[in-house]
Length: 196
Image (cartoon, rainbow, N blue to C red; front, side, top):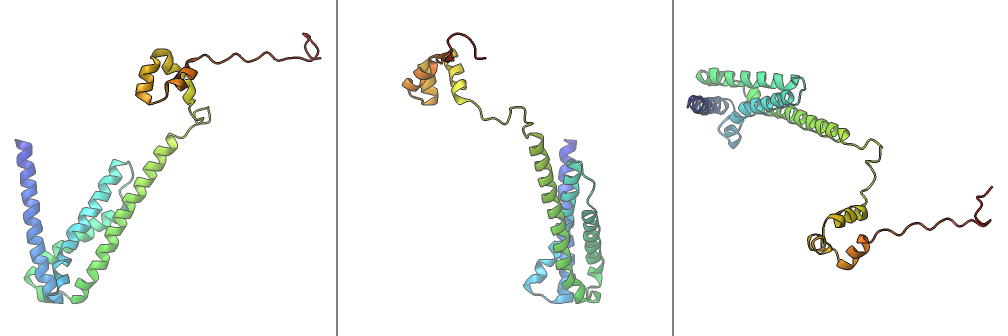
């Protein structure tokens, strides 16, 4: 019950803070740059920058990598942008339009860096796992001998059950079930004496 209370409280605080932050930023953006369609999207950027950077930082910690500096900076920039918008809600006419118009490309660059870091790290982890499973040259890289495997299977089970399971013809299974013919003795041209 205590954990659910904490989770619900956190979710409620996050929702209320997000709504309040969005509405404050919307007033600031509209005062600085008008009431166009774009003005309704710009207030989302700070929270998205923080979320993507936090995800990259958590992913780096989970995979044993150091904290990415650009993502740490992105969290700081996102927090500053959010605080600035909330504080300037009381003085929206003082916010310059160049600041509002310059924020989207900065947010895009910071988010792109975070996502690129996660993708790059994921490839490194996958490549290292593949390298760990590469054959070592001790015969593991040879293809499996299917006929030998089928012979072993036929030693333990009836031809009928193997045919039912694999769909192989009974005639082919009968051939595989027969022991391999012994290799013919090497014939020597000079009788029974070994070659000199």
